[in-house]
Length: 503
Ligand code: AHR
Image 1 (cartoon, protein in one colour):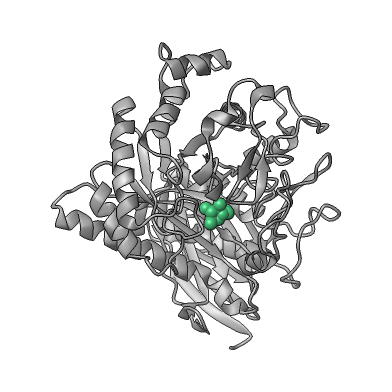
Image 2: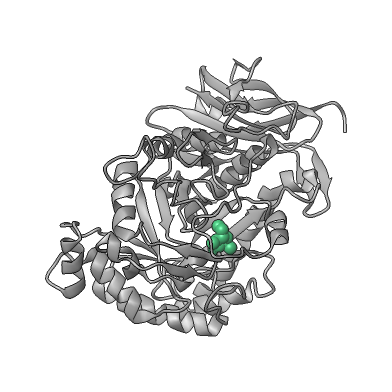
């Protein structure tokens, strides 16, 4: 590869995909490791508020720009009894969490989570247990959460301190039930039947719910494709979305493929959309099923699997507290570019998870909290992506990857807000060693001045943020950017995620 590559593209309002969907900037809180306990909930912490919530984590959550938070799992939910987590704390049982080999103390449950979402200013997305439980327990939970009062379970909520119904709209019908690791793992047929019965009963309590059926837990599953097809054939009339989950492992030393992870996400999304639309066509319906990409991130999953199962049933153990690098942040920024590019069909997405467990926010018990590298591209994209998403097709050289074949060196998306006149470009240079000289034609969006240009990159692509050096990796000004006669000129460092704002 040459030491400087030329890339060009144009930002064209005719390439509109859809409006920016705020639910794209979701996250995920699972009862797993230290996500809840000593993550967002730690009554003895110096910053704890009257509910025992860490104020430092609440502040970072707001700064991250999270809009929706999925809860309480994940694998955890498939053997969870929601009623263990409500009512008087001293009466709440300690239970075995089979998913993570831990003890669940139930000191935090639905009512705390709902109070936390109100303080964080986020929408809840609740997953129900369709592993060990079924229709009745799902309806009970909905009655507890959404019925105003006058029934056994709604009155119990009121007695527990929540006068007003929660009005929770987004519900996941189970979690990853295609995976043999899941407690209550099912075939597509078994799951599809249970999901449709549950969905029907839930809609009798509250008709206008947004219901998400489980899709594949990864596009590498042997049942990927046939699972989506069979589940949608069985549930089409009653569900709104099908879920996708994807984790990208930086661990095997193939940086070139890792940096191209978004190419895999693009393929995953378009394959599921195709399957869903085929089912619609067979049924001669105009209804379209959208995607809830409700678990995605970078995760050293191979390293985690090598450690094996936890022994001794600990409480809130340190598990998968991955420390994220510069390269990981570039990939996370790129995955968000992919999600935005599919805003016409991805109606929600959740960065998994929020605190400590493969998370943008890290905490120490009784101590500090800090932003991991991946915090930054997420926070900036959530803050500035606005208006219409515009597809970008760069004229860029490709590079070869072992996993995904030839992949363009540059990936980008833009948003344009006709009301404010603001245009924002999100661009990734995936090259390991070569800077890119970019010329972008921005006449179509009538960009007149440069508001800000930031980049996240570092000569040390393995640099991380730690408790001792929490700001080792932060976005910095991208020098040398110019806007002349409708052409934006920028030099993008290798392995970089950049954001350019024009007004
Ligand atoms: O986010 C960690 C785990 O990954 C979740 O519990 C599960 O749904 C997925 O396999």
